[in-house]
Image (cartoon, rainbow, N blue to C red; front, top):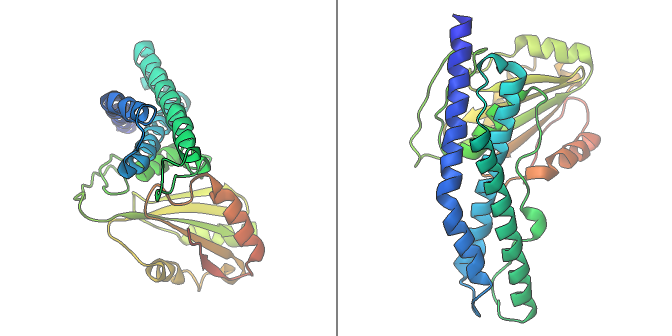
Length: 283
């Protein structure tokens, strides 16, 4: 039974790779064309200044997910590893094409700005377009789930891993969805006690990141307020040692939230917090 579950999960990972590959092939020509338009026109439509970086963000998200899944397959599901050099080369080429086109777009946009032909449009700073979400988990399987949730955000439609109860949920795309990352820090004894009492849903993730640190993700199928999430953790207050822990909550409602600078923000927040404090980080 366990072998069958592992095989089914591996197959679901390959489907995600294929879906992302198809998406990249389908979007690339139009993306290149939009990037090239900026180099050949005197007036850039304001909408394009927003759409091109958004599309590039989505492309990078897909490429990162593919890379994380391939690492997971090699590390934990190598028995079901299927090599496809042609597909891998196509994906690499698509990533290179996207990066090259976006670089030309940014260069042309800067030239237009310097010439004063782009007005009343805020150009997204280059530093805002990251390669994708940060590395939040050490376990490859947990990081893949994070990347999938990061990309989907507006819907939940996945098959959980072989190490979890099989489950498939579908949520209408017109319903909001968000994630809450949580981090507990303190003595290893207090973290041990807390972890032994945690029992979330199958599509949430918990990982003992370090002896003194516990990380996890809550997946919300509706829009939630920070106060609601804080109440979820209030039920752990009677646990011995809980009052000595620091708890940081990081709500994520879109791919624009935080990205690569989250680790620095986390460390800064923990440096300011006191024992027993629960803080919600704002983007």
